[in-house]
Image (cartoon, rainbow, N blue to C red; front, side, top):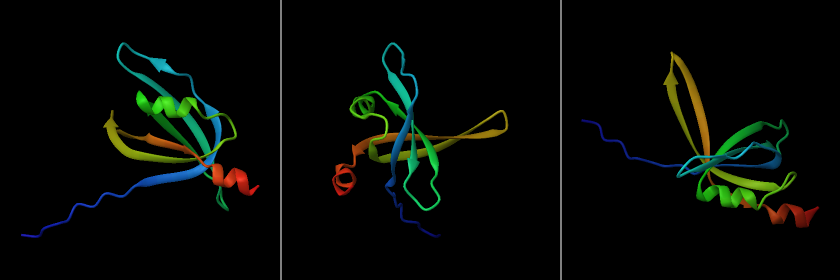
Length: 101
């Protein structure tokens, strides 16, 4: 019998906030999405979701802020199609980048 060791990677992207989605509130929850453009040679545009307490972190950010987003990725199948969601669990404004400009 083969044993495998569980490893968990911390997923993160660094980029500039280019868009905020509308906040949606339920009876016991709050969610909002936001989009960043990565600072790479070939920039990527990536959309993330925030829920509840992470929404507080997002509310401190503004358009064009450079941020580091830590997130979890999960996928689910619905009607024979796969959907992937990137849920941010920590958002840090990258002040180091701002001070270097």
